[in-house]
Amino acid sequence: MLYLITGGARSGKSRYAQELALSLTPNPVYVATAKVWDADFEQRVRRHRQDRGPAWTSFEEQLQVSALPLEGRVAVVDCVTLWLTNFFMQHQQQVDACLQSLQHEIQLLLQKKNTTLIIVTNEIGMGVHAATETGRKFTDLQGWANQYIAGHAQKVILMVSGIPVPVK
Image (tube, rainbow, N blue to C red; front, side, top):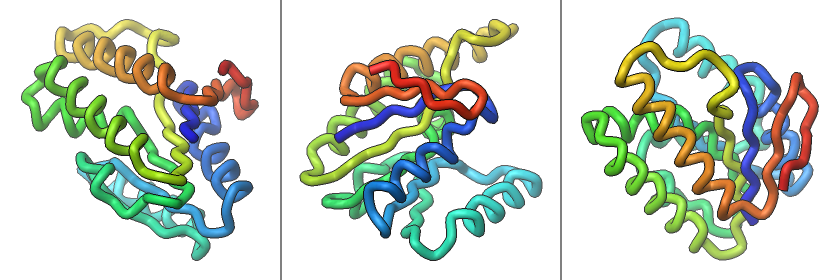
């Protein structure tokens, strides 16, 4: 089963994904795709770890999420935007290579038996258009990645001001 939870910044996506995971299993997995780059972000990551509590098994993986032992588990992958950022940097902003890497990872994740994936992403196109070429490339990449994942998801939830709105 694949869920895609999407919405704007601070819309409640991660909270909802975690609540959903806990409703499906007492021992969920949390996969953080973030790469910590400054003290503020490190503090946020620490707070998120504490907020999840002891029921969670946590992994931090910036690229090869499919290599983690997720088979037979309920796993929250948070989030696609940061995951894509890592691919974007690895592939030197080559959008096609980034998208292919993400699609390959999603295909490998979908092959894991008895696994429920709850993937969190930021919705694109609801804000200001990027002012730089790099920003526009990344917006395109994120939009295509979200469409790809949504196309494979059994359920898509749009978070609006903390309220889950079923889309698919």
